Length: 258
Length: 261
Figure 1: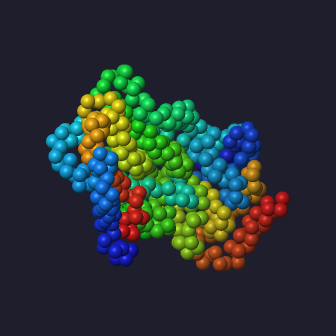
Figure 2: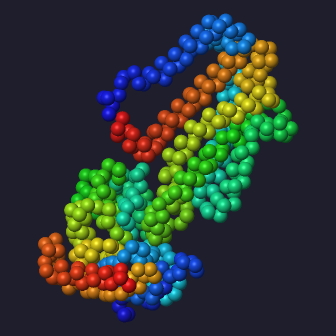
Figure 3: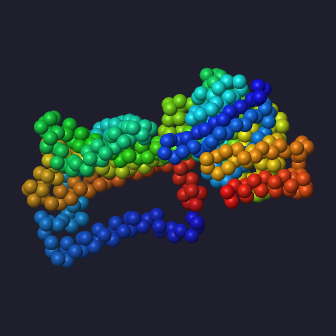
């Protein structure tokens, strides 16, 4: 299979990106669109370089808020997932409530967090947390709830208790689901923290974009967007690599063909 | 029968009130080191019977006595294997076979100290079913027949007194299946455990078992008991003898009667 794959396939995302950027630049120049409305990629790049120092500071603020919220989300999501996934009663009791909670628009929740914790880092962390724990919980619960009944019989006939089944089978079996959900959760966590920063913060990329926007400095706004998406993609890659290393047995079909 | 190793006495089992009995008025007994087979149409409660013997389900009525004690919970002296091998894909073949030793006493508490000894035991078992050299392979690197051999090794590694097999060869091709019959026959001859084999395959039942029970469709009752008096050791050639064919035909007639009834 590998030999039939053209060599440039690995480069195709970069080619697509380059084509889009070129078309974007051409449209902005061709129609003489003002930077205040829709900045060209070169203008965005220029502003990225010009404000590299402040942008880096705000980016770090956003990054660490996101990671803190994400870490909280992983811990809580994991625990909830194990509870919901290993007990039918807990599933019935908690799942509808969690779905209801998850369907609240998180940006609408930020003002509440501001009242409780004031403006700044804490609401950003908490927004990242509440937006990212749900996919982790759902995935863990699914992984645990789909253990083959025969396998459970084999273990229970040997006198295994619930903890044994969970440790020997349930958790290892759920790992691919867990790592899969981390990739979704980390990008959601960035959304959460940035949304919170645009509403209520004096720091972070969200705040930077908000204040730049109010001064009509559109290239800087777009620079902020770029930085967020680069950070989120980088973290996505980190977790994709981690997933592959930890749970290679689950994707063996693809490895065998690659 | 006081000397019976397993005594099932007038047992009913209903999963819940609405669905009625899955098995009804089942009585049978197994001597120590006996090999019994249970045959019957789909959904006749054969698997339910296995759960009763292993202590996973309590009977709704009647008693199950194993090894002189009424069954009231998981027995720990049983090993089980199923149609799909249910091996854990993140463990190697050897680690899969070791799994019961990590759970059942007295192995559990000494597992860390005696790991080398247990690994040697698991390796020896794998070797005896022809899987030498595959210890470090993962289950998904093995063929279906090899996976099923591993699954049987896992069921036997803690030296259970009672081996419960639920259609273990049903998903295999005909040649592999016959090969595994012989593997099971040899393991059983060597290790002196008692076997209850649930199967759809009358030739399999006749070739392997001392006694074959025919069950009716749901609610499962035992319709017939047939001792297989073919001399042991049995070679595969015996399956082409007239005597063998007669027994299979006789069993087949019982199944046919269930269908019409």
